[in-house]
Image (cartoon, rainbow, N blue to C red; front, side, top):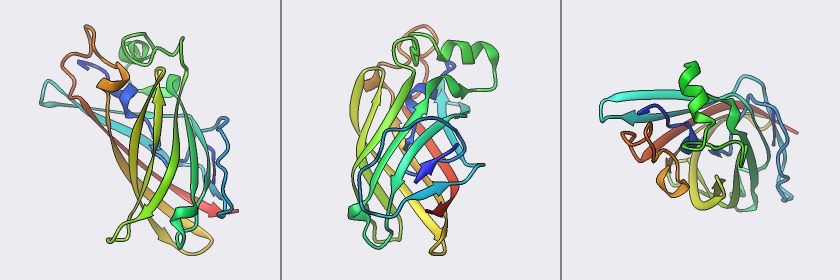
Amino acid sequence: MHIHKTKLFAAPAALALLAGTMIALGGGTGEATAATSDAPAWAVQPGGELGFTVMNNGSERLTGKFGTWSGDIRFDPLAPETAAIAITVDLASATLNDGFRDGLLKGDEFFDIASGPTATFTSSSVEALPDGRYVAHGTLSLRGVSQPQDVEFRLTGGDEAKRVEGSATIERQPFNIGFGQYGGSLDPSVAVEFAFDAARG
């Protein structure tokens, strides 16, 4: 599947993947690492969304999105164990729709894009869940740190076109995100959600 595409700040931990999220992200543009599998390839259609939410001070909900990401996804719903997923997210495309906050996201307290402008998710296995969802197990790499990461998603549609919707929870602290003046009041967990349409081929 080729993907086209706070206090203030949750974005850094929110990736995704793409995580997941990963597996299913659409709407951005860019170069992605290749996924290796004999499973069918899917082309993500424009208009997908990759968003994130984090609580601040226990009561304020901060929401944002990533505008640019890319990926290579190969997936057979009947044989998920053959899947291969690789997602790359452009961290500079994160926005909270606030110029000051968006600038801080790029700095060393959060994404530190001068040292590492991208985050990546690479699957190691995908399995079907009893309720019809799937979960991709893999590795999220961000700010020079790699950690295990799971992404859950659901497929609807026919054989040639699918709607993909999913989510992941990312713990920001292992990635050294948000420990300074502007991040101390953020919840340690960041929710990531994604949705997109994909066409086989």
